[in-house]
Image (tube, rainbow, N blue to C red):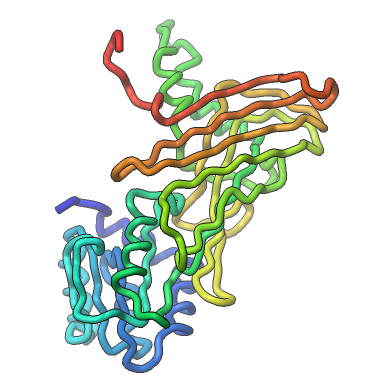
Length: 319
């Protein structure tokens, strides 16, 4: 079986009180006495245990990694082992005796676009959820903005630009220029207003792919270093959290998509970005195409950047 997260990683997830309190409240609203629950990606079992605590009659805890062994021990220690059916495997490969009243999951990485998350939720909704059943979360909304973040940009590129010990490291620069990284951005580093990139409604989503054409007109000058992407989660009616810049820090973080070069921007400049994410097996292909138009000269192009995670991997010499 895959190794997945370490037990200490699950501990950090449990310690994220904003996330945990939101999930607990969503379960509280969804579970009635005797409800049946499916917990996908159960890890060490905290959501399955909460479901039992709230009155669920039967909980199926599905986890592909060996963390499920620890989850069994924790369930026994809390007196819930008789109500939790532990299944080691993928939710897409299991069969349950009957459909459940509630499906709960947190299969996100830094973003909801992580491994086979969307396909797994679509499959679980079709095969495992009762007709009047509840999904937790209900939806995630993805946002993007242009950022002025020189320290983050330097951290990304400086090792390849600064000729350490007089050595030319630039062949690696193309790889990192086409690679996203996890980051923490402050609200004061946003150079534009957030733009809604996509809404993932788990009650209806089918395709794991996301595409959007976004545009911003700058209302102040700055230096653009790339895009930051984050999400707002809606777990249930009135229950949500956000990992947006400026919000309390969550376990997820944000995603930084760098530009090929830092670019001085003026008020009135127009930034056009086509951002697409395409599922490829257990991974995603990210593509971000940027065009910057000079606000003072109308349609004059200041810069264009064509980037893709396809180029963010080492290639054999001469390939």
